[in-house]
Image (tube, rainbow over all chains, first blue to last red; front, side, top):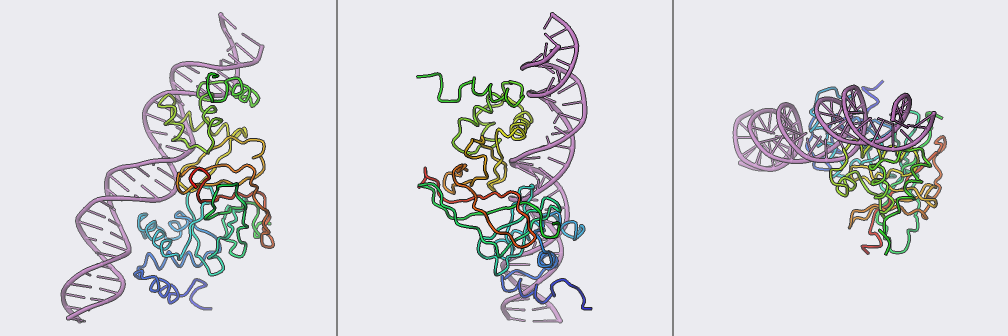
Length: 140
Length: 140
DNA sequence: AATATAAATGCTACACAATTGCATTAATAA
DNA sequence: TTATTAATGCAATTGTGTAGCATTTATATT
């Protein structure tokens, strides 16, 4: 078996370099977690996984710079904090997020696009975000 | 001209009584603000409008009990705090919320229903919330 | 390989939203 | 009018996230 099921370092390094972000261990480890997760993750998830190796502000700043570069996107599932997921090709367009009431995880549904809605006269639509909750495929 | 453009006290009293909530001045005033607003309002909006007549915890607890009773519903427009609006008949069904990038107000669109989406196999949908942003009818 | 420079980090403090425990006060039922 | 039950105010606390600033580190340059 290979070293890990997690994304290989080279992939992560390339991703950082292509966005002109310095290759630091905080970024490597945080990006590795994000790439290896099937669902959105929060600051707390990252903090738990990484122990106290990095300062809170480093983790938050890392997430913010990933988001600015478009590597990840923020998801607000209504539970308080913000969660993040890597933005994959299929998910560039506005896609649906799904929060499971059972396991409390929030998933990107990159292939499920947000339908167009017709707003009342005078309201001009720019963006939209659709959050669904229910039971995820691992819990149903 | 009648006493005010705001909802009459009797309406508010009835609303409280029908939900078995005691008629206190905090509830009367907060509910009056909510009923009189065309858009969602936050704790800060209420606090500003009411001065320091009521404690922070009273205001939050009042909003929470209104929400539990279904008198109002919470809207998270991604700007930090939670906003609230009275749930009117047409809006009982899941409706769209609209955040204006210009005036920063968030509106209920009670007649704009959230379209059904087809989630991937295994995901069972219970509820959904759709937040649109753009320019509202008062700003366009 | 050594150095310069620009950026990232850790630390501490802070800001803000929201909640909680508890003693006091007020609203309604009896 | 009193008894009961719930709401309020206060103070403290939690949780999420940001900001300033000195120090350290990654990378480009020589």
